[in-house]
Length: 347
Image (cartoon, rainbow, N blue to C red; front, side, top):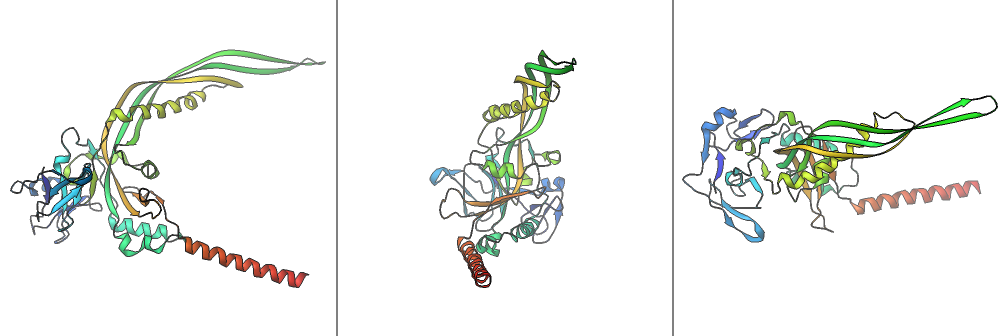
């Protein structure tokens, strides 16, 4: 299975996509290339064919087309770095026709910008362990393209029930209350766009949803070269696997949308939604990610994630219990002293 490294024609160094210039940059001679020029510099490993081989725990093994070192990846990895020569490698064989994304949303936030934003964000978190934002830890922040399905739906929504209108009339000696009952039916053809679902079984849904929305209007037709310099995962679910979940979500919108057209004093009704058309496209979305091990639960690490285009962040942060305990003891001691002084002077 072929691995691809994009090489600089000026110095032979590797090229990686640069979020700030939206071009491909050589880190050695600082040359920049646009997408058209890049196709002429693409260096495939034809003279060094790279074969996929099984490794332990369902992982796959490749050989770096530059240095020949072994690269061990998960079955869903589509782009990575060589651990020895550090060159970015795009694993083209992972993106066969049936797995090839329709679009990719390129990073617009560089790693340095992401690191600076992280340090500013975590600065006010008093009880986060210092190791979480140490220089060595922050250097482990990586840019990852995560697979998503972006779905557009056409839905026939129906709301049927009973509406009541009540009126009062003062007849002098008594008040007459009149209640009229109406059969109510509302129908509408509704269109929902850009409903997003992760296309990776191991994806953390809270992390994924926490950094929405993405500027999907800026997505580009997929090219392997956009992955160079980043990590990337390919999907391991089909569009049909997320269809029911999407249908349930759009169904929940029918009642509030149609209920707003009903103006009776009281109304009770039952909504229904029939999906007439559902189109999903497979898109890779950019995220800066930093993880930190959870000593109590290795399968549930702490994390920080940033939207690679908008800078929206979310995270699950570790807590420095020792620091928190010392603060609590200090506050307790201060309150105790103040209480003693009040007792001494008042009583």
